Length: 121
View 1: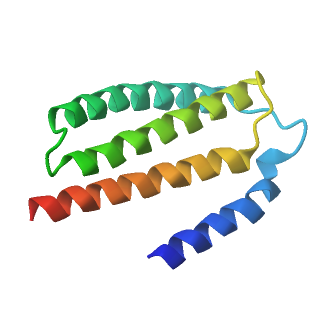
View 2: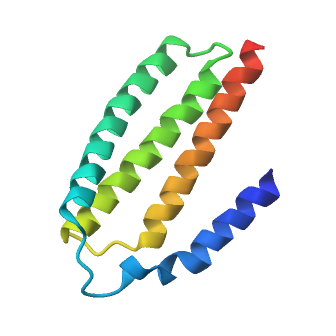
């Protein structure tokens, strides 16, 4: 599992900047900007919910899984914020950075759900 995650991370690191949307002068579509903003807002609400559940389970067996989920949602919210800022033209954001943050969010969600499943079974 670690080898697959590391391989995917290296692929994103080295080949993420060669995508077509990284070309100068390419404008982001309006709905892409709006969806990025909406996804960031939903992830912020999810982060607040996951943190509340983590506080309820603090010290329990499920707390480690919810801690992973809260961290994953934090990474996803950060990636969506950077994606919005880059697409709207407010900041120069590398697509590789956004991809790596989304990869970390996906890995954190996988580890969190696996930890919760292990405790529940």
